[in-house]
Length: 67
Ligand SMILES: [Zn+2]
Image 1 (cartoon, helix red, strand yellow):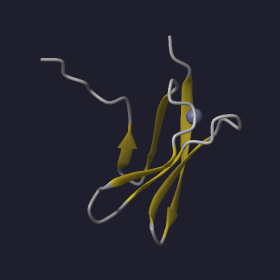
Image 2: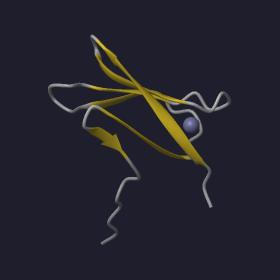
Image 3: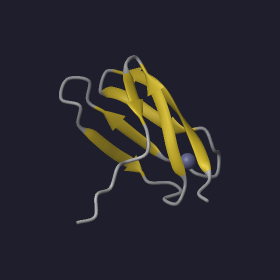
Image 4: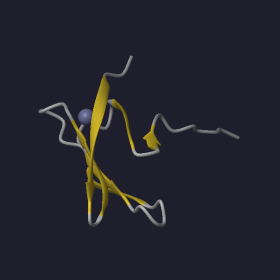
């Protein structure tokens, strides 16, 4: 089972910055508050499950459909 990591959110002029609390991971991503576009700055531990929330924006596991 994948390790669970928590993302801490910080509101910045460039959007909402989510950073992983795990010191060895380093995942960081930004969400544009107007468009909702997500940009991953650092992938960090790709095998870990990341979740976090701030101001009505909630990140959780993606849903993957296989057809
Ligand atoms: Zn992480």
